[in-house]
Image 1 (cartoon, rainbow, N blue to C red):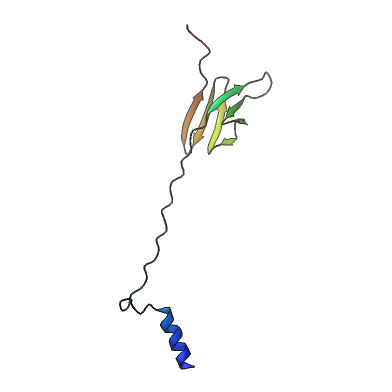
Image 2 (cartoon, rainbow, N blue to C red):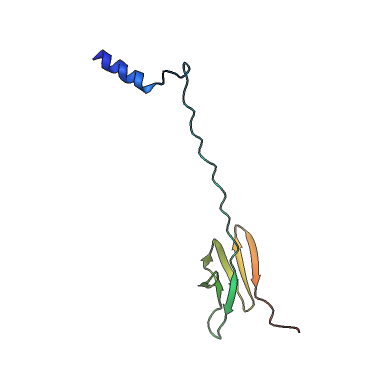
Length: 100
């Protein structure tokens, strides 16, 4: 019985390793900060009695909703105001005044 316990302990250690050597702990890879790309404003639709809606990254959103990690603060006929972590961005549609 003693012989069996000794052989198990021997099998758990590497006989070629230096005395009191311990295998180094594997370090956890550092987490990358998540970066969110600013949504692409494609269109704004406003009705007479209904609030404006915007199409951001192909999704229809209204004020108060979230898209791609950004909060939609306000939607007006020509711009959309987004916020994230205390910062604000204003997305605007191109001007309709075309000069030739």
